Length: 457
Image 1 (cartoon, helix red, strand yellow):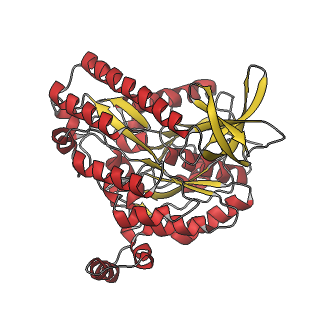
Image 2: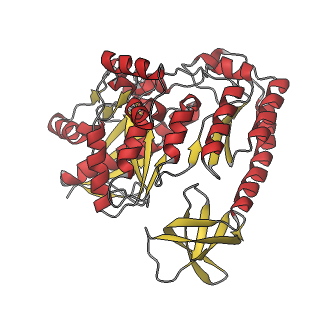
Image 3: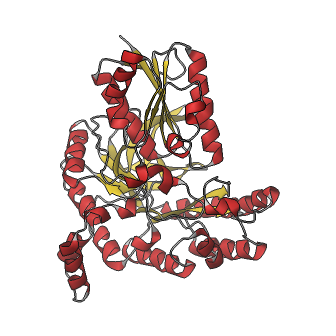
């Protein structure tokens, strides 16, 4: 039996695609082994979000070649797309697979085995309009099932290469998603996480002229909740998944702030299985910087969205991403952004010192000193740690639930840990529990600095 090893860099979309490719290879008779082992085929699903990601992708490709000189080394994904003009020169690579050819991985490898000639399978991703359909029946090493529902991005933020490596928005047919979720539910998964390159754009490519006319008519009248559901494809998808037997939680990945409108949030609040964890990518709390980033909202508009979420959900988790030291960000700009972060009181803030990405507009803008970026990141991190503790403390005394994921031992006592719907890590005494059990109770205290203790009902 031939062996294949995978290595994934980057986002949850890449992780999903690797899972799908792995199942395709297993169906073709390959045995999957760890990437550190000697294998007949190495498939590296690459990332290109930063120059550092490019370098890591190259390193993993070269490492695969060193582990077995006779192996077939496959470079797949975003680095392939961003470096397609020079990747041919890399002698470590046998097969090059772009972002909309991964579902044909078995045939691609078989073709190479016939002629042993270096092959390149890259389409013009920026002209591609068809969603690359995958289907998975299991998720390795995860309690939650991440489901890719959308690919591509039309936003063109000035710091981001993704629209050039992933192409334009392409959405997966809802019926295919529902079928996959039903299969995963039958396999025991209780929590579904919807993910995509720009999740808020799910379904925009489905819109036709009649659909647009219907939307225009509805916005001119006082619409009912049912009418609104037909207008928003993402909301409709969430509702349909929540109705699948066996699914107890539906969680969503990162959202574009502009999707946070009252009808959308009000409708979500009526879905009992929806997890009130909203990750809204802010990037900066300074309007000048947001404009330079080509983000299409202001800080005030973002804050209005957060207030809407908190209006309809009792204690939602609102998390975000912030870039510090973006080209042209002055100390005054940073202070404005810092003050905004303090005002919003995010549960978690993921802080990224700006990293140059060749091929983007921001790469040619005036750069901020590296030490200054580190200092700014440290300032925001202190605020983040304070906000995290405050949010966790606010959960104490409340009724809650966790989805059991893994065993955790403290002071000789065995607990099962998992996450609440708000994605707060919680532990409960292990009393014949098992993975994927949902346990309800009352949060009584901190077990560790970042794990809360739930007392079972």
